Image (cartoon, rainbow, N blue to C red; front, top):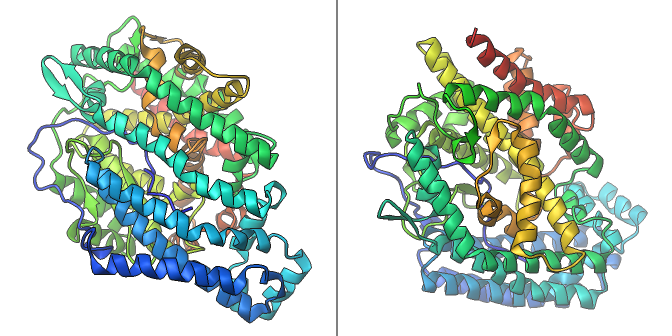
Length: 606
């Protein structure tokens, strides 16, 4: 199935004044000029005809194709993916710009249904590929170098072989996918339509979450209570969405005989379960020296006896509260990218000048931020909700990193460019780190350095500690759902069971916080996605330490890594840097960078 783009970052958007300068908006005409564009009709018509022709030409015949004919077959399949991806990118991006617009929602849904119907006859492709014997496939690769280039795609497809159902059932599940999408849309539209009343002002979710980073503590408290109230009023809807999504997953996993709820995610991430478990164990073991220690420091800085949940993302008392205009944010990020390597700056520049970024906060626009690669023959698009805080600059650096990665990987073509989630965060987190180090370098006082370090530690805790806590919550949720329907209270209890452990003893938890699982989109759109953030952060910290040590030829190796897209396994990609994610010590290397920053902050306290 070809799905609408999904946000790649559950970003911490900041707040700010309206004086941000001219915020860029998307120009989607590089995909299509509008819903009624003749090119869009042409592509839909082509897709319908080509899918039928592809099935007629190849169904039941894949095993008998020689290497050249199999290559032609793969390339035809790749073109189908590219055209379908282009249509769904256009429909999805327009929808995310204004999720409350019924016309855009209908257009996206209609496109999804058409493409699902057109591509149902293609379900045989992966099923028959998996029935070709290993030796026969290896012989074809040996015979044709161009076909052998697709070996990583075949390897990932064939990883699903043990969990494959009959052709008829696979077609049924393919068709049924649009029903699951409808529940995701219900979630998106419910979230986008929520309104919050703060001191008589009506805000959307983005603006309200934003207030949790306000300097004024009473505003943070008011926002937290209002979030709890509105989530509470809608909790039955959110519980229904989660119950249904988890049950649908359980049924499919059971039929496929998947050993765990997480197996499908690990397969799609091209990562071994034991590597994820090593990451999880390393992070949980590090809670006391990371989040617990940092929040105790923060409690003292804020002058509090106890931290409340609305203090978690509070700015520090000495923090600069000015907003950063868009032009300055662009300069800061571009300077960091150029300083690392001018080639990186050259790839990033068109995002700002050619309508590849949609930056402003607008009513009905999807919350958070993401970078969507669209298709390899076009270019990525970045969505932000920019409000002018330093954290928003980091989000820009992050999403632009995704964009640079996606541009570089596009050379691999449609089937090989897509990077597993665990590696998809590499360039984004690295881009953030470059921007942070450049800002740290320019700090004029010890106080400025302290604020920057604390901000970076908080972001890393949100990316590593918080996302692993989210992962644990999801593991518990899916396990509990297998025993029966979950009430909102049941889900709330599971949520609270991971919060205290991850945040530490400095915190009290207000009544209503048990409903804060409700707004996290990843739980609905992409179960178990969240550990990819921790994976990416740990990987980049290890990678950055190699760069900081002045490793020879690092930039060239780094560009090669990004250009590889999804054509290599994480072991192959990290080997040139002397790193190995399957080594438990690897994760300690990444986590120690966070711990060292907390050491420096503690030392500043004298």
